[in-house]
Image 1 (cartoon, rainbow, N blue to C red):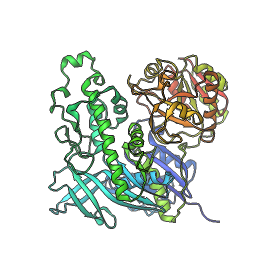
Image 2: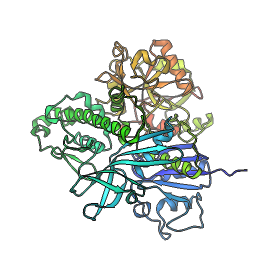
Image 3: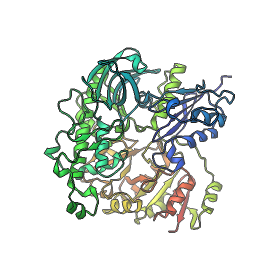
Image 4: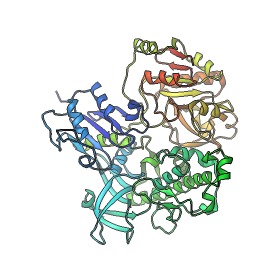
Length: 603
């Protein structure tokens, strides 16, 4: 009998994650924050422990990061191993008798960050071959020699173009890389050996920032952490076109994505800064600051800057998509890296490129946690020469907690105010249409940052003040929009998908059809768009059934859907997390459709 092959991929940095494969099939994939309860958490130790629920032995542990495992991971006392090898050994997942700094079962794929982004996007796409476009804040740090002077340089990945085909053929064609030191001559042809590859490819070196780094700078200027770029995306339609901000990116650069050095101050590889001294209007006066009670998002300078970075960064991405198609000699494009989560830009591509025959797949696990899956899948295909295209179109990949009624009842007893009773979809629809927020908890959690009906907060999309009310309850900013989940069979009557049949992963902010905005005002953003999830019976039967019940009562085939968490918290993972979230908020209802139960928490 053939032995099973178990491979775990781990992503070490922020948005850490673990993906476990058995014979090339995904057993589970999860971000560390879902288990540790700390947003953007690094170091996937809890995720590695979760592996023990499925196997007590790994054949290979494949490590993803931006820098060398041996040099940056920290050491275990006495043994001197890196902490991930040490933890895997102590858990018994790898051979406990081998205690060296180069354990044969641990595969270090650090410094292949962009290739791992490319891998997860390619292997989850429907394509047999494609060109990957990766746009990231700062990917791998790659030490090279300056071809002009011979001096050592530390380069950081910003954007990459990589061809991809089965079983594991990934060839870099182009990189835009950042460097701390100004360079003479921005274009260079590096030998692949310096990057651990064969052949040569085009490299654009800049001491500035790339597309995502520029977006991060504006995000920080608006008052948030650079990693919270989704907030900037939500703010952008509140701004206006400002002629003084026409060129955030240098129009003189022969390559897309190089920011204007007058407007931005580089801080490679960390977040860049907006040079608010370049224009007087970029600095808020004391009177302006007081007038908005310290809320930077109500200042025209922040709103206009958000508008500028959204519209101009997506224009730079369109240039790069065309460049990728030309260089890769294919019309199949997969997009990943942090910028891949920009659902406004993703929708814009469909319009800008509609007449060019380009097929685009945008990876929903585009953040760094996705590199854990990319590492595991790449190693599997490379080691086995497996050319199977599994078209991995589901995101319900979290661990299978397999809760029984007794498990749920035990969780309820831990709360002083929670009670459980029988309920069906009609009962839940009655609650929602009576202006109640209802959470839904079922099955395996969604991988990636989007809630898709298994860990969701639901509300009535027809209520005019619905957005303001739910933002208040979730402790989110006033301007942030909400998503909708719609029956796939009804989507084209309500939204313009620009040629797509469906959007099951909530990766596009799409225009609503005429007359729709008035019907579902709670989920339509100020620019007339909504980030939607189409739902079929096959993709999520219980969620489809619930939305159908809402349609039967209201005539509206859509429910207001947002992630099951409070502002600043990760999505809930376990039933205990779910009940705890209700206890900390004004939300009262938790629906468990698999069991026909409703938990009510009195606040």
